[in-house]
Length: 82
Image (tube, rainbow, N blue to C red; front, top):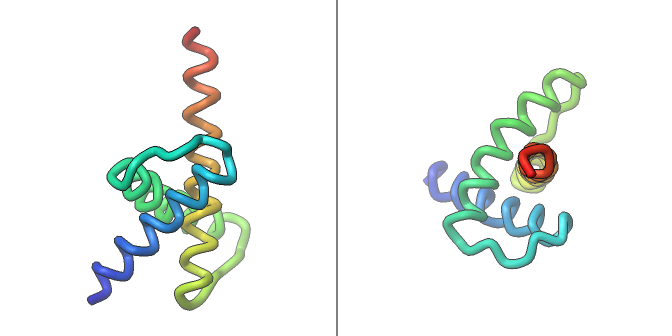
């Protein structure tokens, strides 16, 4: 059951991040990947800052922040390649 919640929060976080970053509809799989990687990245970043987030809302916030950082980083890398 935890895996199902993790995946649902990942999809929601990826979708929220793409909406916040004006990325448009990325699709379910891309949103899931961004959300899952974002949750790992967000957990790492929150740990560095000494922050913690509990519960489903905290996990969603952490994953969304991580996904936003991921999108911003990918855009920066793509901009430098062109």
